[in-house]
Image (cartoon, rainbow, N blue to C red; front, top):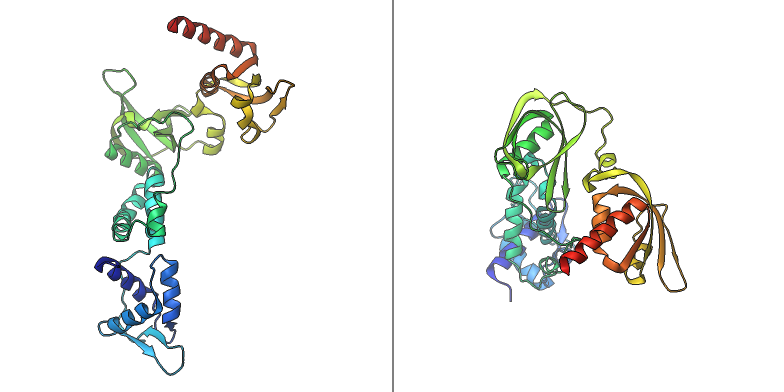
Length: 335
């Protein structure tokens, strides 16, 4: 049985769906639209609601032809209802969960009341309602061991995002890992923000230097947006910067990786290849032989180590030797 909150929410949306005269909408059409918005009602309930609402709001029924149509009076005062449909509330909730670190401060401020409204809307409906239940049916799972995100100063984040949006310089107090006191960067030119897992990075240039650097935003202890305009970098492309594997910690030039995988460890590479030029072939014993051009990053080393004895690197020799040395030291540590 519907609660008073659910009935009120349904009636809000009914009023929003009713057009201004001479346009009109039938009770049957309203019923279909409400059901599509996850309000499970029948035509009789819709007709009863319309009759009750017409005693309070300037809406009327045109009974000259069947089916009867409802509309707001042509000269009725402009009227707006601060309500969200359930699909809208669901969408805003997912936006808040997954995109909150990608929004500029002005957009985040503008959407904050809508996020709260979405939470209230979803709280008024039964958990079995399809839109409400959807939140318990979808998840985003990181491919690696999940880690809790670092604590971040929200005001610092806001100032950095605002400076990035307005192309202004920043003055930052940045505490490097294991440093006792923060380093002061008097002129930071922001270029982009990148989120990698739970970490948020500021891509920027320092002072008069032209090389692009990356700093972890959670280590910024104090931020000040300056009035001086930030320097841009000609032809800088954030997608090209990411594609260069800067966030995988570059260790050298791209290389051709040749390795042998057990079937269990390597079969996913058929569907998710390491590179566009990957070649994967199976031998008589079921092992998978791989050849692929890959970036030389620390992420690659960590990924190979994570496969344990499911992979044997053949080339390049430097990578093979590095992994062999790590394996020997691990064996000694666990002996």
